[in-house]
Image 1 (cartoon, rainbow, N blue to C red):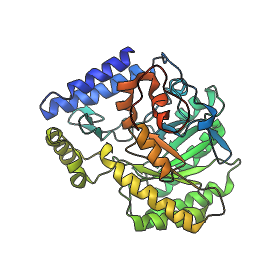
Image 2: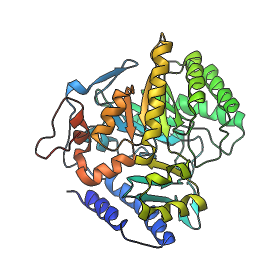
Image 3: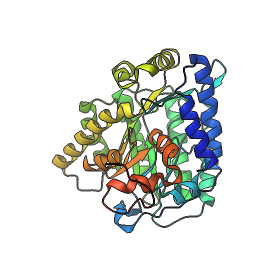
Image 4: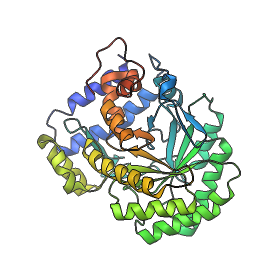
Length: 379
């Protein structure tokens, strides 16, 4: 067991202790940043190369495994070789904005975060920290490239800028990533921790502008996937799918964290509810992990059924994100119709238990490969 895995596991054990909310929040927020720097600075002690049977072909790209990190895990283009050697199917960096962002600070606490171990959940109000499109694109341009391991970038509008200026800068950032050699782009329209206009009319206008000024004039084909929240209503999801197909987008990622705090409260363990309520009432933030799995599952099934009836004449895929914590979660997400899946909170909990064998463990329910040398969980 690596020192990073050991410390992460000890941190999860410490979360079971009753602590006053301000102290628990401060320790969680600091601990998340410290442990993440420690983990991603390591070289994996074990490597996993997914067997060819796991490979998936989308948009002319080969993904060696149908699961990889969600946007937000690698904000600063760190952990690239780490993810590859563990067996991830791709590498997604971001979400980045045009201008660097330090993230949210609340009562002196930088990038507020809290994990809920009993509930297999987390709440974060990080505030979209990142060094900017240009800085990350320069790093990606210099990375070694591996076969069947696509590199993607997640991008978002600068939330404090006027919409017109923000859109032009977003297009410039997307162009920088294309020039840096990324294989796909994910447009994040779902971050709950920054100001944005969620109204349908505004979203439609943004998507139309990007389609006209970027999709229609790509110098080389780079798929663009739109990412939405699991809080999206099914009737809006149908309208969004229709719009994305009309405009030439290439996929939809469902979804990001949820702000339906009261509706999700029953999914939080009773011992953790006071901290959970204190966090969202004082700070806000987005809920991730097991509590949002049902919402993601319902929307993925809806989108899959809608597309089956619509029968688009071009490649368009659904990616599942949110509440992927176990091999059975991954298997069911793919059975629901998702072509790929992303994880973050689930990865953290899985890494605490399985270390560098997280992707090998996740492969155990997909009908290929093996988890040799250790007992496999029941699927």
